[in-house]
Length: 348
Image 1 (tube, one colour):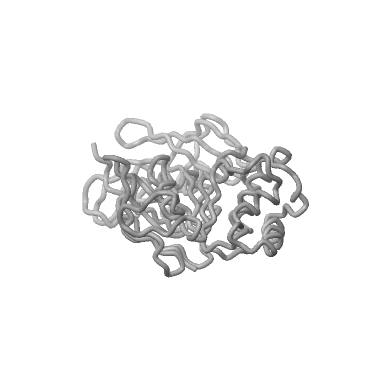
Image 2 (cartoon, one colour):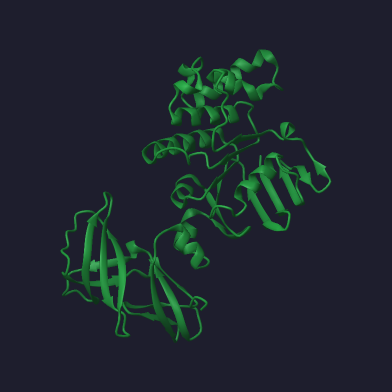
């Protein structure tokens, strides 16, 4: 099964929230809609589910048109599973009864099998008779996922499904959910504004801005080959450096790299892990350590370097754990061109 969105446009009164969305979610693919809050991501999910009437464009599920102007297949007939941000569990129903709630179209004699299968997928078969208030936040999220999967939908939609969990629990529940979705083999469309979450969950990411798709691709493509500065900064931290293009190279205060732009001013964005910190005698640009902090998996080094115009450029480097550098220590730095991106200068 596939989900295809073609020319989707939507507005609330005079406020346009979707501006021509074309997107395909393939069989068994997990695609994350990523972007700032208020950029139309949840609206797109609601249109797919049939919770909003489609104003322009077309939505197809499994090759069947389920929505276009003047034609709407009702939500209950679209065979779409939806996991909401607040889970929307019924407090007076048991876990099994919550999961069975979406199975009214399934013959009564088969419902218990569907419920058992869905709970087994999320590892909650021993909690069938428990009530939501007896479960942790992570377990409640898994119940909501089981309820979405129980009818064996053609598409699964998740709207900020991990936002209410604390950081440590969120990592575990995301991991569990990823395994469940991969095993189910159902196209999944996930809304998030968390870039790390999207990179962890997604086969592909569709990054949105102001109702438009800015770039669609694998996490590696967006992180290592951003289409513009917005993509680069949204996917992770960057160092911003002024540059000047001369004969196909962008020259910065810490070195140059190839650039396919005409001669003139430019801007280089450099990932912190692409800034190498070396002993002061190594070939590179002299820099001074401002601070060095161990952050667990990496060490963050704050650096100061001359900007070539009489001022100071402050940069961040992320290095493997173990490096201990003192404030004021002199080092040499260089950049990895594979982690650096050249763009035209920002508009004034």
